[in-house]
Length: 528
Ligand code: PHE
Image 1 (cartoon, protein in one colour):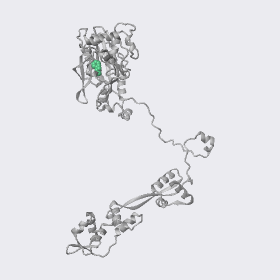
Image 2: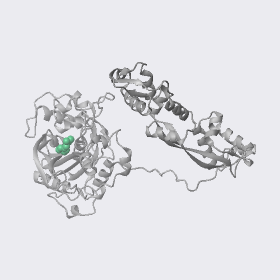
Image 3: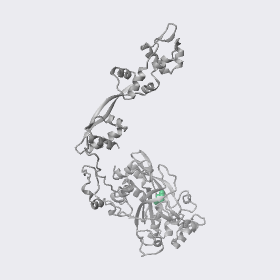
Image 4: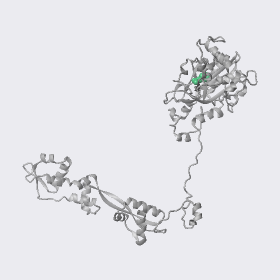
């Protein structure tokens, strides 16, 4: 509509001298006309020149007087023939109307203050010139300089720069704009209309879309660092330390990764095999997610199950057991594993059977005896997800990741565990450690691990550890003199400290800011 008006007018006329006037005459909005002119000018269909005009607009106060009359006029009308006391006049009018009206009335010599303290009219009749002028400005008419200055001084009008255009035909003028085509289609070719089409020119300066690539999540970076680029925990000084352990080129060469690719676990491997009694509060649905479908496991190694039942109910191997009636149904219940120690228990069981595990843990593996070999020491680790029925807050989520390590060998002691932990954590930047006695159903002794955080200047809890109990290891069939030292910690904790994230929901889950994932730096635990 506006575009046709502009191009159509220029077909028969030399020039649009004033876009504002042009818009007014056609009842079009000036903004719309300006947009069209700018666009046509860009494509050089028209040549547009800026015009700027200073014009007056009413202030809010000015607009009020344009509607209701100036204060001095209102005040004049409120004075009766015989005069009126100042107080009474004040009562009849708005405070500001009275104040301004009184001043202006005196100045205009419209009113006077008599000796009798009465306000009276000094002239018979007055004209509201201020209102008339304001109405003229409102109607877009010009007023003379002197009047404009007076109104401006009273802050009833303000100057405004008005911008418009004068427009002539441009070098590419056409009475109707052809829309430039962006694609040559099969239909254009069949119809042959491509000959008449105007194609949009390539813009070689346009920026392309930023190339999108995948980005590693900070947790994956921390995991990668732990797995690959550090010498963790290869250098773990074990009593049977081998010079190879201390090679500096990293990689978990001496630690085998445990197959943790099963989030669903049976209560048996998650709890019972770990000598965790069936009444233990962690086995409550308030703490653990149980599966509805399939709700129970189908395969367990029966003779081992029998030995586990025995150790819980009446003990053995110098233990008194717990002395309660162990229920198979409890052990069968499927759950989302609450710790990766569930996988450690499967692995140690397999180790005791001298049957090396396949790439994934399958229940079948646990009940077939493959290729008997003599006991061989092992170092295992895993980094994977666990689940707990937690109330979510800034430090807890219902799912998180655990780093777990264990060493299984003859003659290991608590001193070995402490040595390994010192080595492990110093590689993560924590070389000052303290141990606090703790309790786990499956370890004795158990130690909570605290590390001194140089940045926070305080001791922070960083992990849990212990020596697996004979009640756990012996029913599996491990030789009597074999000990297992083990430790576990969350992957989130060191990652949050490293990346300066103080709310776990900013690190993991649906509230994570993707820009953070795209821009965070490489992980160098312990090296910052
Ligand atoms: N399973 C323990 C936890 O979830 C960690 C741990 C692993 C403790 C191994 C001792 C030995 O907190």
